Structures are given as structure tokens and as C-alpha cells.
Picture 1: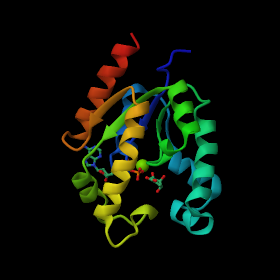
Picture 2: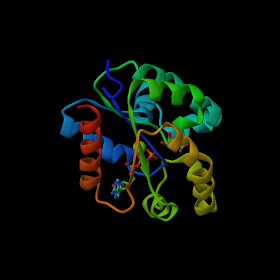
Picture 3: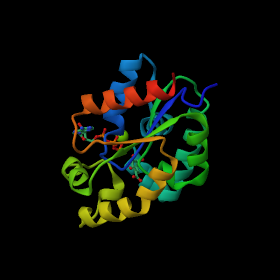
Length: 174
Ligand SMILES: Nc1ncnc2c1ncn2[C@@H]1O[C@H](COP(=O)(O)OP(=O)(O)OP(=O)(O)O)[C@@H](O)[C@H]1O
Ligand SMILES: O=C(O)C1=C[C@@H](O)[C@@H](O)[C@H](O)C1
Ligand SMILES: [Mg+2]
């Protein structure tokens, strides 16, 4: 198996993992998975409900189990949850099984994109800017530590982001 058989997208909430991932999978004619959506389908409830009843750690346990399963699949595009890289085991599994793309995005842009959001429990706060800044500072080193490639989604249309990723993926996969 080649290291780049799968494409895994990592990055903060609102960076565009789901949006870009779906388009990327379509361009490659491979299945698209989203770990957040897979957890919701498995449990039958939405992510805010899991956070409410089981807390963030409970959600992270479910997320780790899902990442374990999804990284056994071959030939897929996977959008991971924004916090999936927090666990070392997830970073290892992603690194070992796919080509990791970090969708980088400025705090300002993320704030704009998530402003009307109700589905992201970590943004249910009086000061979303401060929260996003904190998450950015904590997580950026983790995203960078596992990424094979990074692309800024704050400055380009999603179509352009997709072609940049495809270009890079094909060049390493040649
Ligand atoms: N250039 C772009 N690339 C990606 N998404 C964009 C872009 N411009 C605007 N968006 C918008 O940003 C919003 C957030 O994107 P998306 O839901 O894909 O993020 P995400 O990384 O999957 O977030 P989460 O981790 O919370 O699931 C969407 O409404 C999307 O349409
Ligand atoms: O950044 C995060 O920690 C999260 C991002 C979302 O994708 C979901 O996985 C959940 O809302 C937590
Ligand atoms: Mg998403």
C-alpha cells in the first residue's frame, strides 16, 4: 500500500474540511467520509448532544474509535473533526495511512464562516474570537506536525484549493 492511498484533511472548525473533502472525493471518484458525520450516524444523535451528555472527553473517545475504523479503509477522502489531531494515537493512525492535508485558515476567516453556527459546541461561548484564537494557538503545531501538505483556504475559492491539493497529491503519488 502506498502512503498516499487515502487523503485525510485536518484543520480548525470552519477551515473547509467537509466542503473541500466532498469536492476532492468527487474529482477523484472515490468515497468521501467525514468523521463527525460518521459519529452522528453511528450514535443516532448530533455532536452537540454527545458533548452535552458525555462531555468533550466522551466525544474524543468516540472520535478515536471512529478514526481507528476509518483509517482501515483504502482509497477514500476523509474529513476529520477539528480536534481529531489532539490525540497522539489519531495523529499516528492518520500519518501511517494517508496523505495528510492541513487546511490552514486565519482566525478572522474562521470567525466569519462560523458566525451563524449552532452545531459546534466549542464555539458556544460569549467570546468566540478568543476561543478560536486559543484553539488556533494550541492546535496549529499539531496540524503542522502531521501534515504532508498545507494549503490556505482563507484566500482561495474552494475549487482552487481542490486543484492545488490534487496537483500535490498526484506529484507525490507518481
Ligand atoms: N475557500 C473555501 N474553502 C472552504 N470552505 C469555504 C471556502 N469559502 C467559504 N467556505 C465556507 O466555510 C464554511 C465552513 O466549511 P466546512 O463546514 O467545510 O468546515 P469544516 O472544516 O468541515 O468545519 P468542522 O470542523 O466544524 O466540521 C462552509 O459554509 C463553506 O461553504
Ligand atoms: O474543533 C473541534 O474540537 C471540533 C470540531 C468539529 O469538527 C467536531 O468534531 C466537534 O464540534 C469538535
Ligand atoms: Mg466538517
